[in-house]
Image (cartoon, rainbow over all chains, first blue to last red; front, side):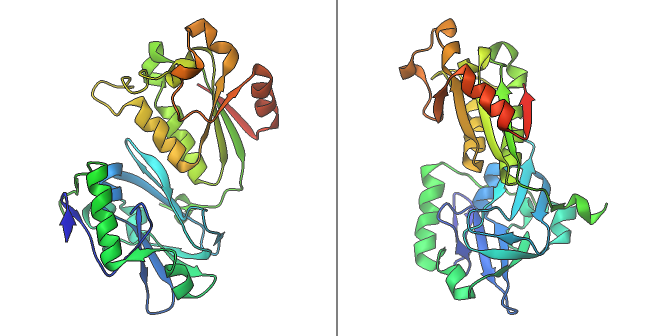
Length: 148
Length: 132
C-alpha cells in the first residue's frame, strides 16, 4: 500500500502524525523506526543518535535524534519506556532509513506497562491507513526514497 | 567508531539562543534553528530570543521568502522544524519600532513578546547562551 509513493504497512502501529512506526517483538520489546513519510521529509539522513540503553523515557521524551543536511529533530516517543538498545547497523549507516525505512528499526524499547498499554496510544490498520493518506495529501508529501 | 558517538547521555540543560542576524546576513539564519532543534531533541529546554535585526525573521513575509543558500529550504521551514522539536520563540519588543514591525505583522510561531530585561533574565538563568 502506498500514497504519493510513500509505503504504508498496515501491521505496524503509528503515532498520529505518522512520524514513527512501532512493532511488537516476540520478546516483549517494541521496535521503533521512522516512516516513509518522515524519511522523505528529512532527506538523506546523516546522523542518528539513540538515548543510552537503560535510560527511562517517559511519554514525550524522544528516543533518538535524527539529522540530515536540511532537517534535525527527534524520534518522538508516546509511551513510558526504557531504551534497550540501538540498531548498530542503522547507527553506522543512517541512510538505511532512506532506503529501507520499515526494515531498519532505530531503537528497541521496553514498555514500563504492558505492550498492549503502550500500543493503545498508537493507531494501526485501516484507521492508520486513512490517516497516513490524509497526512500525505494534506502536506503534499512525495516519497523520496533512496534506491535500495 | 566508538559506540559513545551513537548514544546520548547528556543531562537536561537550559539553553538560550540570541538571534541577532537577519536578512542582511541570510547565511547565518538557518543553523541556529537547526542546532536548536537538535538540542531540544536531546531534552534541552531551548529558547530562541530574536533581537536587533533578528526580529525581522519574525515579520510576516520575511522568513517565508528567505533562504540561507540559493535554492535551499526557507527559513520559516527551519523555524517550524525547531518549533516542532520543542523550541520556544521570544521576540524583543523594544527592537520592533526600529524595524517598523507592528504586533499584527508578527508570525504566529512567536510564543512571547519580551523585554530586554527578560532577555537578561534568560541569559543569567540558562545553562548556556549562544549568540548568532
